Length: 267
Image (cartoon, rainbow, N blue to C red; front, side, top):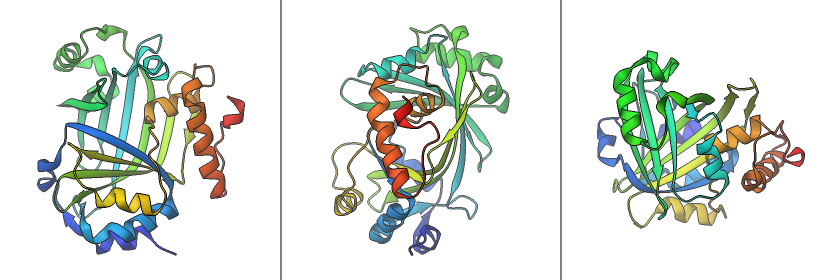
């Protein structure tokens, strides 16, 4: 059986500093979901054409994020109602580097994602409203929202592999062991052994990664960790748009002998 860690060890590393040229802060994102065994097959096909990010000798990084929304879940509802223009607000802990960023993601009606962020301290990760610099940043990026009205809604934790093609025109993140915690009701959920992959590129450059996906018959599946996490952990939320996606996740998990606790049939 293919082992993803063995394949990672065969890949040429790239440092965090070298990755700075491939930030792609204004980009087109395409997401895919597959089980862990299929991802191992995928890596075996592309390992010679991509670098893997390495930080202090580690090729798998840990991430913790806290997502904020309004009292009436405006950001979630806009996504659920299929509005093309939408925003996300989170504070992320990049565990391996010991850094924290407040991040705002804007998606426009042309499908392009633009991310803005500032580095913050641990205190902001624990309390968004503890720092005036953060307030100024969020109010500037999200002028239509009341900063004081933002509330903690969901935390996500996962492990990530980041690879970049040797032409440095695209970056792919591979997130596994994805876990959710709902701050409002205390519910926890996860989607392991499923893996969320995101291809990030500026433009329509040729992609060996996409060719390998086609060979493995993997099709795009647009998925927001924030929205899926909210839907899985709170059945009282409106979630018609996400029902088919949750059913798809459930089927993929069952193929590997797992099942989502909050079954899609209960939605």
